Length: 71
Image 1: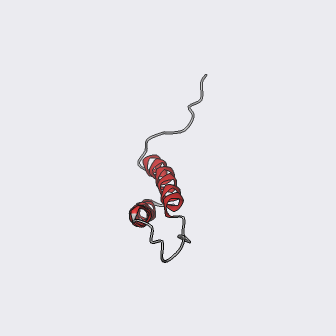
Image 2: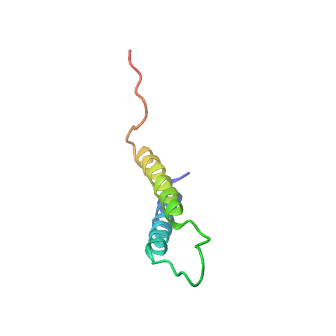
Image 3: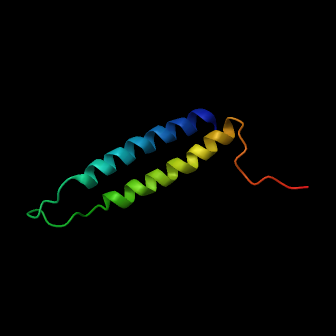
């Protein structure tokens, strides 16, 4: 992935994580029944994907984040 696509994916995942966190923090409405969407786990999936993309972004910017070989 190139730099603009990585940054765009990070922004989309950040917005999605905020929306999922907001939906998960709302009080449950007992009259409607149980929630059908697991908002908190979806938020955590977005955060993990953001961390992976952040490492990829750092690699694109020239920082080495992987295992360094020893001689």
